Amino acid sequence: RITDKILPIVKEWQERPLEEVYAVVFMDAIHYHVRSEGRIVKRAVYIALGIDMNGKKDVLGMYVGENESAKFWLSIMNGLKNRGVEDILIACVDGLNGFPQAIEAVYPKTEIQQCIIHQIRNSTKFVSYKDIKKLMADLKLVYAAPTEETALNELELFKDKWDSKYPKIYKSWHDNWATLSTYFKYPEAVRRLIYTTNAIEGFNRQLRKVTKSKTVFPSDDSLLKMLYLATMDITKKWTGHRQDWGQIHSQLEIYFEERLIGHNL
Image 1 (cartoon, rainbow, N blue to C red):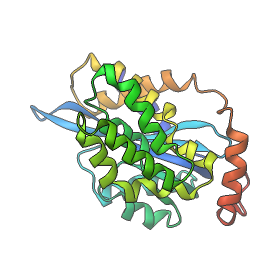
Image 2: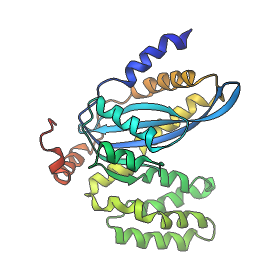
Image 3: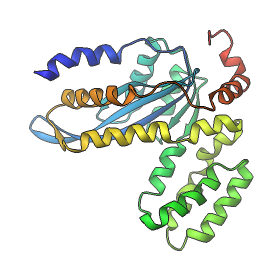
Image 4: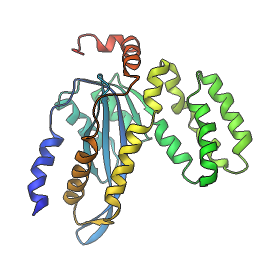
């Protein structure tokens, strides 16, 4: 059976050595249905996608979990540590339960940023296709603003324009602003790294496309196998780094100077 042949390879991939320092790690969850003991259960697969100090992106690991808890996250963080990761400068997460406590235990200096990408995705889910382009352009004026003050002004303008049609969007940004807006303290190029959505969005979209045809997986192992094969297929196209990496790298070096001392980067 193909699954049995591939599983040892997946295991080896899940335990391969990693880079010493990652500039950003995005944590994301995708939900699937799996057959377990005769019942169909919902499983979350957590994906850690990292961008290293050379600007190269990579899927660090995939973890099938039944629930989000600090204990579950702690095992993932310890796993990264055992594979050679000494520091993660910024972790972008989507309000994952128990994550802040777990990462603090293993990487106490990591800065946690509520994921802008998820916020954009979640808050625009129900926008009609004829509005989406205009609305997204107005929203970008908020999250890509040069300063937090400008961003808040743009958010109010967004409210005036769209609130009658989509009241939930402004409310969501307004209510989550404290944790969303922490990235305004970074230099502009570093902020771009956090909100430029292509890396993780494209990856998720492709994963969903690959797995859509199979609504229920016969087991956790078959789900993992399918995701691994899809990941290999998607990531082999990931060569090189983004064009603005030189600028991002020098700003990271200045901003995180103390944390990068002694690392061979």
